[in-house]
Length: 116
Image (cartoon, rainbow, N blue to C red):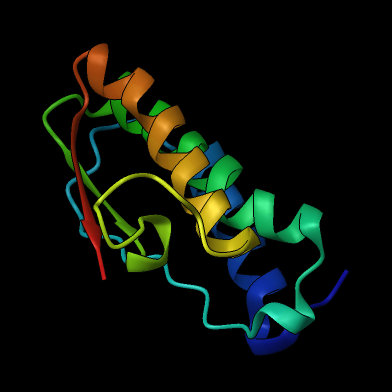
């Protein structure tokens, strides 16, 4: 399914690159999806914000353990008191991704999350 901003082509290119991964990853990857939420289905939101970063973390852990992963969250994940309280589905998906990526961090992946 084609999506705005060439997301489908970018995801296919990323999948092809991951499939052919044989050596350590020595490059900087910046993954950003700038699509308004009204164009994303719940499945697209979960795939882009949870599944895709988790797949990247898994491949980094397996093939390039010296690589660090920086994940971007959102200030909408927390309330005024700093407690987890997602404002909307987008923020909830970012919180879910953080929780899921913590699994990889506990297993040795170098991980940082920046909430913007």
